[in-house]
Length: 77
Image 1 (cartoon, rainbow, N blue to C red):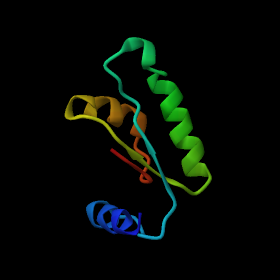
Image 2 (tube, rainbow, N blue to C red):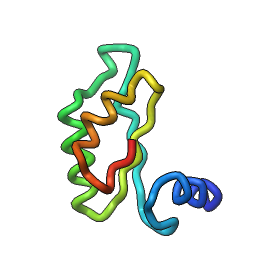
Image 3 (cartoon, one colour):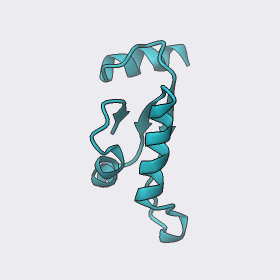
């Protein structure tokens, strides 16, 4: 975990000691998708509680990550 925090703080501009949550909003199965707006609302709620949010996914899910990100400086795609 400590090494992962160090790598994350180098890749994106947030403090290494910051609390963050990773979300993976994509899926190849439509039945496993929760919905973009739900992930966006969850990300906003987490940010309002002082967390940083890191969105995980494949290169093909980058557009979905940008939708969820919604211009928040504490959400990283």
